[in-house]
Structure formats: C-alpha cells, structure tokens
Amino acid sequence: MARNILNALPELINNGVLTEEAAAKVRAYYLQQEQQQPAKTNLIFGILGAVLVGLGIILMVAHNWDTLPHAIKLFFSFIPLVAGQVLCGFTLFKKADNRTWRESSASFLFFAVGASIALVAQVYHIPGNLASFLLTWMLLSFPLIYIMSSSMVSLLYLVGITAFGVEDGYGYNAADNHYYWGLLLLVVPFYIQLVKNKPSNNATFFHHWFFALSLTISLGTVASNDALLMPIAYMSMFAVFYLLGTMPWFGFKRLLSNGYLVIGSLGTMIMLLVLSFKFFWLELSSANNKPSLQELLAMTLATLAASYLLYLQLRNRNAAPVNPMGFVFIIFIAMYFIGVGAPIAGVILTNLLVLAAAIFTMQRGLQLNHIGILNYGLLIIAVLVICRFFDTNISFVLRGLMFVAVGAGFFIANSRLAKKRKQHVQ
Amino acid sequence: MYSKKIIWIAFVLMVLLQLWAPAAMIFNKESVLKNGKAYKFRSAPVDPNDPFRGKYIVLRLQATSFKPSATQKWLQGEAVYVQVSQDSAGFANIAALHKEMPESSTDIIKATINYVSYDSLKEVFIEWPFERFYMEESKAPEAEKAYTKAAADSNQKTYALVKVKNGDAVLQNVFINDHPISYYIKK
Image 1: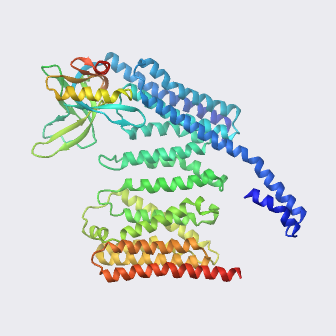
Image 2: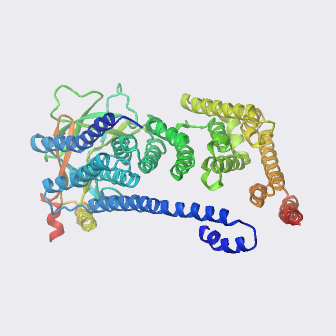
Image 3: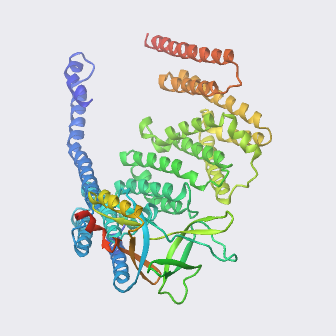
C-alpha cells in the first residue's frame, strides 16, 4: 500500500494533483512509519519464538524420560521455570520499557509454569483431572499479566480459563463451583486499562475477540437441567456485544477489529434461527423443573447490562436513528413469555422476527450502499428458508415458492445495488 | 503505570509462589512414598494419552464398589475418605466410607465418589486418586500389551503398589506376578 502510494507520487506531481510540498510530507510520513516497523516485527517474532519454545518444552516433558531417576527428572522440571523467572527479572530490571522483551519473557514463563507442574504430576502419577491442572497453572500465571504488563499472557490466560471452564462446567460430573467467573474477573482490570490507554492497538482488538468468544463459550456452564432461561441470557449477552460493538468510543474502524459486533450480530441470528424450530417452544411449555438461581442471575445481569447500553445509545444518538437490531433482545423477551403459554405463537413470532431482522439488514445495506451488509441480510433469509425446508408439515409447493423467491431476491437486490453504484459514479 | 517497588514485591511473591507449588507437591508425595503404608490393588489396564503429561496406562482397579449402610447418603463427585483393609491374599479392599477424615488415619485414602447406583441395592463406586501410571511414550503401548495379556490370564496376578499416609496415596509401581511392569518391556 505504502509502496504503491510512493511510486505514484511523481505522476501525481506531474499532473498537478499534489504540490511538491505535499508530496514531501507524504514521503516523510511513510518513512517514519517504516522506521517503526522493525520494532513491530521483532515483537511478533519474539512472542512467536517464546510460545514455540514453551510448547516444545511441554512436548519434551510429555515424552516421560523414565530411564532417568526421579531426582534428575524433578530437577529438570525446575530448569525452564527458573530460566523463565530469571528472564522476566532481567527484563524488569534492564528492559522494562522494551515491549518485545516483556511480552516474550512473560509468554515463556507462562508455559514454563505449566511444564513444571505437569512434570511433577507425571513423576508421582497424579491423575489430577485436566481442570484442576489448568486451574493451578492459570492461578500461578495470572500475576504475569500485571507485573510484566503482558497482553500476550493475558490472551493465553483467557484461552486457559476458557478451557478450564469448559472442562469443569460442562458434561457429566460437571462441577458446581463456577470458578471461571472469578478467574475472568482477575483479568478485567487489565482489559479496561488496555481499552482506555491503547484503544486502537492490535492487542486490544484481540482482547475484544477473546473476551466475547470466551463468554459465548462459557455462559452455558451456568445452565441448570432444563436450561429454560438460557436463550434469554444468551440473547441479552449477544445484545450487549452488539451494542458495545456499535459504541462510538470503542473506536472501531474495521469489521475485523470489532469482535463484539461480529459475534453479537452472528450470535443473535444463530440463536433466533435455532429457536425458529418447534422443538424448543414445545419443550418450554411442557417443562416443570424450576430454573436454578445462577441461571436466573445470568439472565438478569445480561439483560440489565444490555438495557443500560441501549439507554446510553438512545441518550447519545444526536438525532441519528438507533439501529433496530439493538432492540431485538427486548422483543425476544416479550415473545418468550408469550411462547410459554402458546408455543405455536412463539414459533411463528420467532420466524417473523428473523424475517424482519433480515429485511431490515438488507434495507440498511441498500441505504449504506454496502454489498456485504446487503448479502448478510439475504443470507439470513436463505438460512431461514433452509431451516423451514426440514419442516415436514409445510407443503412442497409452498417450500418451493419460498426458495424461488429468495433466489430471485438475491439477483434483484444485488443488481439494484450495482445500478445504484453506477449512478453514483456517473 | 504502577510504582517500581510494588512491581518488584509482586514479582518476588509470584516467583516464590511458582516455585512453592511444584516443591510442595514434591515434598508431600516424597513423604508418602517414604513413610506411607503399602497396599496392593488388583487391576487391569488400558493405554491412552494426556496432551500435557504424555502417555500413561489407566489401571482398572478391582476394589472400586462398596455398599454403605442405609443411613449414609452419597452424592456423585463428592469427596470421600475410604478406609482400606487387606484380604487373605494380601490385596486391598474397601472396609468403610467416611464423610470426614477419621482420627486413626493410617488406612485412609481420600478419593471421590464416581457414581452411585440406585438399582436394587444401593452401591457406591469410588474414583481412586491413582488410576494412571505414566510411562515413556514408546513403552506405554508395550506395557499395555503385557498387562492386558496378564490380566486376561486368571492365573496371573496384576496389581498396583500404592503408599498411603494421612489420607494421601501415591502410586509407586505396577506389578505383574510380583515383577515391576518395566521387567516385561525389556523381555
């Protein structure tokens, strides 16, 4: 990109588009950018190197050198740990301002901690399930996030606690302790600092994605047997993501950096599509178990947070219309309570809500002259139609007509947008 | 961001904690191995994988179920203090289950309730804290073969040697007919 612009400069000056002075400024700008580049490359390779060496040590540990006596194996389990600690100490002492040193020494120590506990557990044949191993590892490593101010360790920690949450909270023999939420709280202050101090840094963008993904994966651990309130809890949480993603002060420029918007929007649509089937509503109306307290709590907190964010957006909109997608969670809650008494009404209303959201998205795509948004709306309708394809009680003729209509819609909408763009250019 | 002094204090605390965790594990387990009472648990094995700790044999221990008195209620996943005793052939048996650590703690192993069967007779199944024996990755499959063969042959005795102290248990070795399993791999 920079190369192309620099190469085009002489032509632009010759044709009088840019003055010599402006061209010199452009050159100086890119020169400065280029000088900053090596630091960034160093950082990436430094972290990558530390992560690979760390993972390599874990694999070598896993080989289990059982010809070596216990004492030597135990001695080796401390070597990477101490080496990592010395590296981190040196970095704090001599290179505290060097991000490459901080990030790579902290990442290395993160893996060394895991390797040393694993090796000791192996020597004594401690079966200790994966969850308790991950819990110990994460608790011993989280201070690194703050002491070394390392966003890489913070991301690794998020992955680790999510794996712990899944291992501990889902499935047969799931624990009822919900430590995941406490572990998540430990990293929140660091995240808030990142958002405040470096809002448009790549590390911050990664944190948005990792936070949203971790929460999406782990919210289900609070579900009780019937999980009746979970659809509302998830819907409200996706609304929180969506509304955060559209907040102006987050400074999102590209869709790729905006994990909240992507996960919030996709999550809402996927939830609605799943709930557009009959099974959920029939189960809901026939369930007799009461939901658990933590499920109720998760639902209430998520809904309150979404409502507050929506209120903030309505207050600060400056006459600009608020995106109706932000209201979907409220409509869904109303539908949910109608559906408890009349399941068929719930099914029909959900289908209508998906249809409305899709039409709105397409209209917005046309308005903003954005092919991506337009086709996202069409895709939602297409998936809705495919889901209905499996409903055996809709006649073949009707289903056929639905498919033809959506296919035609793709052609018409896209060609309309193309025409509009041509007119714009002319 | 933070003052230097606080960072250094936090750093030293973290370093000590990271060293203490594995060291405490080592001291604890060494003391059980050195001073613990030995028990033999009859078993049969299978060989899976652990991404972090490598290859191991899963021991299918025979003494896992117990019928407690009707007054005791047990829940799946709950911690349990198992009192063990020896049968006439010298192998370990479950003698009683306790909710709390009993005063006389020489024959007690802390374990978890794997599941409770409510069929005709209420029966409790125990998950022992020594059901894995870690081995070098190339040896684990061979050890498994030797072990499965021995376990299928009813004339052969396969058992796990476990040291017990203060409720803690450490798996010391796995034996087939009184030879450690490494003996069968070399053969």
